[in-house]
Length: 333
Image (cartoon, rainbow, N blue to C red; front, side, top):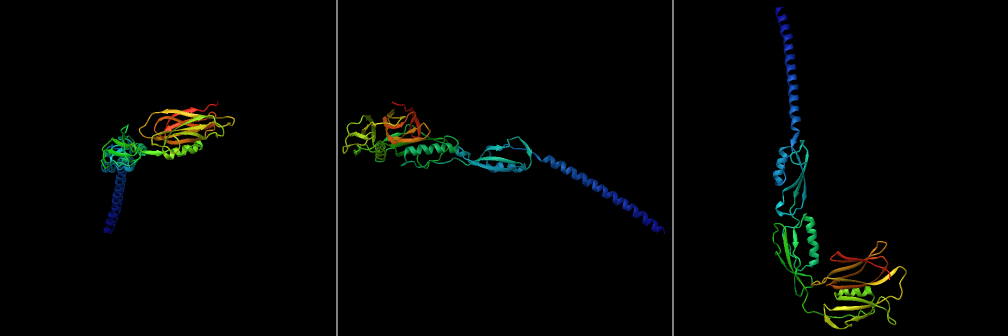
């Protein structure tokens, strides 16, 4: 009987003790979880490091240590030594952000070109255009052309690069000055003057463009049966053998009549002399905004004269190497 009461006492107190221990453990566990979350919330705020000018590998390690996620963008730069370096970052260094935040890195992909290519044999005008593209793509002036270029006679067509410095294959270590020797063409070449009399102005200009001859137009009243807006005289005459730089003078007859609001005239502009012909265009912007091309030739300089028949208030635009150098308005007679 006594044993039964003792067992009941032990059993009752044991249950109380177990309940107390479990309660304590639950309380402690809850307290531990609370502390854990406090620590975790504190770790969510991190300081963004300064990774600019770091190599990409080192920058990634810096971000990983702070639980930040890299987002990489590649961009060309001007200095080839920048290749693989972080050039920009976002957020800025010193910013306080949450762990796991994306950090955008702009990493240099190096220069658009990292060594000098071979320009010999190429046309100087096309190379000028390429250098402009390289400058834009590299974000700065990486290759510069020393102007004016040096010229020399050769069997290559006029405008062809025949020598260059630095040599092809030279590594680029920063902004570099290019020096070219450009062909003037053969020193003594001859041509047979074609028969241009009787051609319309556009047809004569097309022959000049394809033949590369120097030229100058003049206008006068038509005589006898001469047709207006056609070549009625040329000098030197057809069939003459002349040097290739001889200027061919072409006289065009004035049209018999014009439509109301039209004007016929001779565009004339003095241009600086060049050592070899350069691309020249003469466009007309009509009163309604339409743009048409009147002439596209290679011209060595001097007086450029081209006849036109256009609506009054049209605008004539003269360009060389795709750069406008002169414009004027067409007025009625």
